[in-house]
Amino acid sequence: MIRFFVDVQNKTKLETNLQASGVLPSQNRFEARALRVVTSGLKADDLSDLIYNSVTTLLVGEKIMVEAPTYLFPSGAGVSGVSLPPASTVANHGEPDPMATFRFAEPVTIEPQQNFRIEMLFPQGVPGDAAPLTRLASAGSLRLWTILDGYLTRDVQ
Image (tube, rainbow, N blue to C red; front, side, top):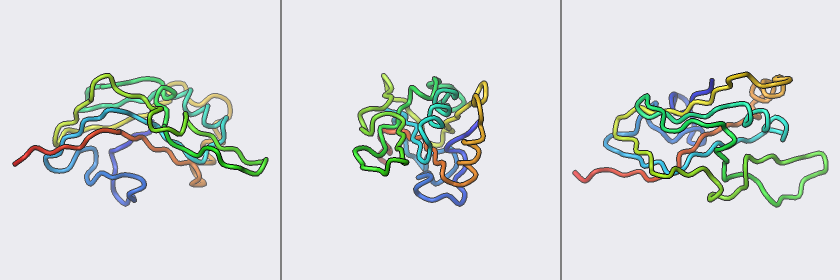
């Protein structure tokens, strides 16, 4: 299982924009309106193994808000329309368009100081040879992000 938003120690702004693990700062409230899973550094076959053999879950206060196969959470990000050498390929998880993402029917509200996290579970493991994913992760070329799009608000004091 991979957990997101639970560890902020020694992470860059590229890795997280949270100040504390799994909670919003101060009196901020967040209305999540979309969930994305963004990848980088994967070949098409490895990306397929990752998204078709995992389940992504958004938990807010230990309550499951959404849980579905990872392929239902396209990234809406990536590289497109780039000329590459014949040996190179670009694999995106969905169209590189911010509107091409999973959107909640109703916003998911994360209240101030409420715990939240995203988990990616591999119920049956990665089929076939998991070595490419392990190799990419250990070499540092595999990048995996989960992104909650929405509105950060704060009550007037």
